[in-house]
Amino acid sequence: MSNRLHRRLWHNAVQATAIRPVSDVRVLEGVRECPGCGLFQRVPRLAPGRVAYCGRCGGQLARRRRTPPLATPTAFCVASIALYLAMLVTTLLTINVYGRIQTITLFTGPIELLHQGYGEAGILVGLVTIVTPGIVLALMSAILWGASRPHMPDWAPRLMTWYERLRGWSMIEVYILGVFVAYSKLIDLALVDLQAGVYLIAGLMFTMAAIDSTLDPERIWQNRDVDETINLRGHQLSVERVNVLTCDMPPMQNMVSCSSCHLVMALPRVVPREADLGDCPRCGQHVRRRRPQSLSSTTAFLLAGLICYLPANLLPVMTYTRVGRGDPSTIINGVIELWQAGLVPLALLVLFASITVPVLKIVSLSVMIVSTYFGSRRRLPLLTKLYRVVDLIGRWSMIDVFMISILVAVVRFGFLANVTADFGMVCFAAVVILTIFAAECFDPRGMWDAAGLNGPVEGPLEGKIRPYRPDERRSDQSSDGGRPQDPNSGNMEPARA
Image (cartoon, rainbow, N blue to C red):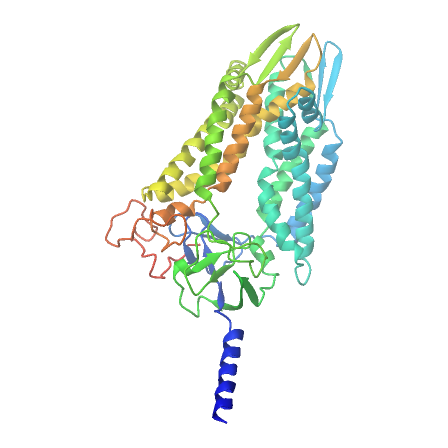
């Protein structure tokens, strides 16, 4: 009898241990992680038109739009689709040289680059001006339809993630500037007429910008339910939703934020730096505390861009042939020609976009890599703001590539006048794309991690992190009077709205 009782007690204990979850994951409502410095902060419920900023680096945490969350972006999305479809079948420019007329559409430039043997550049121009804008508009249409349902479908969060990834590669607004630069170069050559396609592209630029300015992703995510369980590295854990107003803030090193829907979760142990923690219980995307191999990937892309930068500026990007006589032109020659023609604003624009911006990106990202590697705490808020600028203006360097694609398409008059692309244009396009990849791979939160300001980190940066010393004077003063914050204390700085 005693042995049977002992066996029954042992069997029940084993069963209880087997079905008991390892631990619970808490979803923290009212908390956001700053994408610039990695600080978790309490964010109050915002009224329409209000913005919450990070109290440490000044980055934007949340923003509520004044417009209706679905009706307004839907109206602009419908208008954008109409303009996009009309743009595909409309002429952009017409040029008349001694009675010989040449027209150009959105497809003519990429096709002509393919014929001249520069297929890589032609495919790139076609992707960012024709394919990607159409994909982005299709994704947004599906997202808005899914968000209007009583329960958001499972495919809608994945489309939202892809929209955020591809939106920056839709370069309609950059292309319209390339059209104006090409037009300024052509008016001295022949009679040039702007057709309806140019105005359609300009309208599409404004309507797509209006979609982004009126879309409120957070209010869309509120229509999506949070799963009650999460598969965390092979363990099925229960999910509990708590409000930070009714509980203490967990230690920073135990929290992680989804990079897609910005859902903040607290785990019972220190979160590894780059490990895959499973799928987000709200959007289903992979959850990691930091981007994997951020420093090494950024360094590789940056070095490749630096290698291409020298031939991009030294070699001709195009050759203008008039009556059998060729005149190769580099990027700086194009700036000088615009300046001599009296088009000073356009000359400054091309100088800034084609020469200043690539140098700024390469130098800025190099400084950030060095700062992360050595765990420096100097000027971290400034470097974080600089990263946001670099990430924003990187694609505007494509102006010269678009301008060349337009010129090679429209100036095709054989012996009289002809424009051909040169290898320098391919090198310059490679510099732009490689530096964009470098900026996307870099995680600015790693600078703060390496400086020891975001708590203990388990991952590749271990051994390089400077220990936190509360009495150490730092140059990166916070917005609350410059008082250093102990990353292990769990006391977060409040957001300011």
